[in-house]
Image (cartoon, rainbow, N blue to C red; front, side):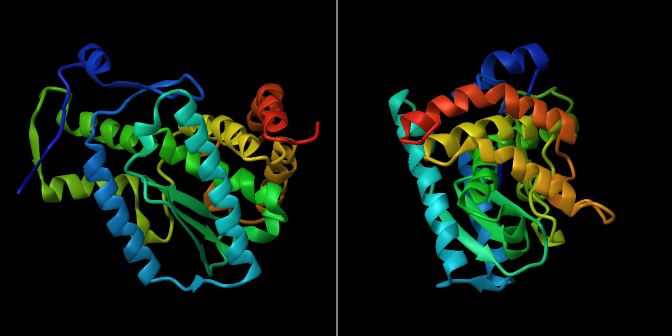
Length: 268
């Protein structure tokens, strides 16, 4: 069995045929991998991860994960519908699970498969803090960052010399696992800093659209940085922008976020 992928004939040609524009941030990226295959692999990996983890259900915290996640999901769906791009989310099958782990971590796989670790909850503190985290992680999926990273790996491996080539299951699986090293207990940390910055911006807007106060983003990220003081940096922050740049960018994006927040019924 072979998977067929669109491979490149050079950066210019690739950009012409496979450039995707984020409808919320306006950033363009190269996404040449097959989304259907990505969603299939993501669902499989998510099920495998859940089967090996202790899932917390029925508690106040578990219900909060579902509640906040559902509001962000609904906000995203409303926005995409408003701009005529509902089809972008047509194959999403959303799930929100709380995993027992001391790691300060959370992630969202392509297709809306979300996991939040109990270790990050003392840092989120409240629904607004949790919305910062979940909005950020959901944004990775909505922005196609997985496809972008896989595409980068494909071009690097194949040299951008083939258009419409095929690769084997094992080759495809190897590329996927480089981007999503689930089995290592360090989930979904292979994003670049440009993608992390975009997820910050997009997540800020999404949480605002969902009615969560975007002004809580700065206190949350400050708490995350504080959590790493004198210890190994949390994996959640491993490829993220430096704190000064992050806070500067959040302040730059806050006015627009507050417009979304006000439109959602938030008090300014």
